Length: 132
Image (cartoon, helix red, strand yellow):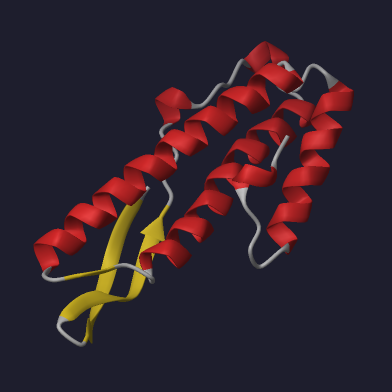
């Protein structure tokens, strides 16, 4: 995850974020691709990892817009802390997702996750905290 196009706003004697772009990146070395095991199930599973990250980015965006600080340095520190906390949450959910679905091999568990992820994506306030 990365940030760009940060627009600041004044909040009385404080500074906050008016708008920010959050960019999601796939790191090819961290993508689990086993050619001999490639299947639609595995592809759907990998899409689930991306959707978990996207849900967390939406949550992060909303939280970033509520931040305020006395100066831009303090605001940057708050942004960094919130971003790190979000990344830790994503890592835990990703690990749980892989364990429960056995990397897409447990079809019943994968279907439950697919349904839960889809439901959270539809909610304006959907959260990775609501995933199994």
